[in-house]
Amino acid sequence: MRKGACLLLLFMFLTGCTMLVQEPVVTVKDFNVVSVDGGGAGMELYLSVENTNPFDVSLLGYSYSLKVMALPLAKGGAREEVRFPSGAATDLRIPIRISYGDLVQIMKRQPNPDAIPYQLSAGLDLETPMGQLTVPVNRNGSYAIPKQYRPSSILDNLSNFFRTKK
Image (cartoon, rainbow, N blue to C red; front, side, top):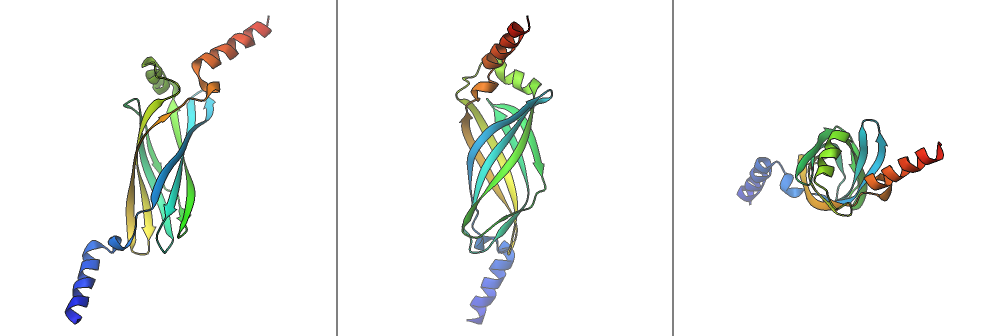
């Protein structure tokens, strides 16, 4: 019996106890344009993080890489603390900034504005009672540009603006 307990303790020590931690279930809920200004577009990636563990875990920070139509578009990360309660889903927003130069490169490829493919690679750095753990998030999906941000809509608005100024 004593030998079995020693082996279990040795196994837990060698694995860092992380085998006792279930990775939270991360779902990409939405990806939205939240602002447009002189420098480009501000977007937010909305994730849902479901902690299926019997204990709370905390986000220490994250990193991400975003490709749109296979073009590397944005990379970043932040140190941010968010608590994920046991047995609950918590929303997490990740801000992303995209320059006009990058948007022009995408538009040159003449994408379907209702289904622009994207690839997200991210890592969520978590603190658990058993130590630190990085949860990978890899998702492929498509994004529909909101009507008000499509080039045709912006040009129509500009055209209407100049017509009313005469």
